[in-house]
Length: 233
Image (cartoon, rainbow, N blue to C red; front, side):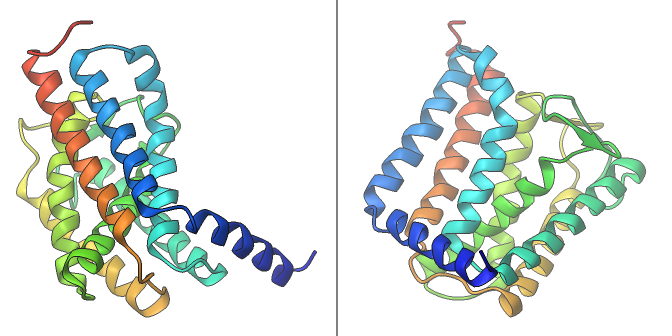
């Protein structure tokens, strides 16, 4: 079976999934993440939730990329470059505190290479893809700067939820400004790279709502765990 046949087979499978109504996709996404946020806030099913976190992040990243960009072998190569680059920057950050600040990853995200969980580059791909989709769906435009701003805003919520979930911790009480500046710069560079080498889809409603659902997940999780007001477990 040659590469062309593999691509044709994928496109046939891809098209069948895309025929599902957007409302069905969106309903499942909100149910999944809001249920997870509720379980975190209530303190129940943590024996299941914690081990599943790396798989949820990887799966969400793959879904976000698939929903936001036209599938091709070229697109996969581009995301492979971003994957390696973001991992390398994170490894530099863990070793030297540059460019993000002083932080350390726990064992919660699984296997690490040079102090960085292999899941972390998937988290970068996830944030970049859904941020790009938000700009496309809600603003109807292509803007790398606006996409980078949404990615940085996403990270603001992610940082506090990650601390509450014991995924990684900062040396200071709050993430430093350098973290958010770095997120903006790296996201902007990635989106500029994607703009020249990957084709964004026209229908972006589903990944745009994935952005919102995950933001709600982080916000509810942080409030629920840190306040302890909702815990029953």
